[in-house]
Image (cartoon, rainbow, N blue to C red; front, side):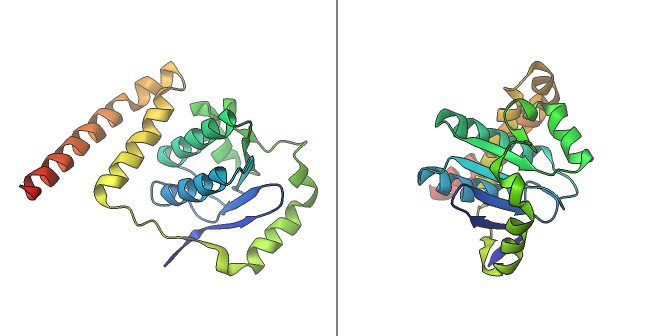
Length: 183
């Protein structure tokens, strides 16, 4: 099974991931998995193409922030291609523009962005694999994304503090239920 909301291609100079629907907690685990595999192979540039993405939620943005931090530690970069004004505003409101390059004019891919998108549309077999997380793993993923956002600035800490507390409670409850089931 695949996740048609994300399609990707590994070019010589980057991993290109195109988000074809809303970037959300549903497809953010797939974004993370694809990116982490690329990073593990020594990849240095990830481009998230958001030209036709109508919006992003906080989990998707937190996932991108976490990936951007990983890329920075290895001298790499996460870049965003042609986000809508709404998506750009959402990313900037949380401070992602401090971690990711949003539509950088000097990026090498800017010269042939149309060709790259054509390659993606021709390569339909590169739909991302579907997320196979269980409920506990998904809760951990969403919590990690929001904790990443919290650490970015004081405003985010206030905004996502309650969300993180609630997710931590859910996580403890799920873990307790699993422990009880094993006994």
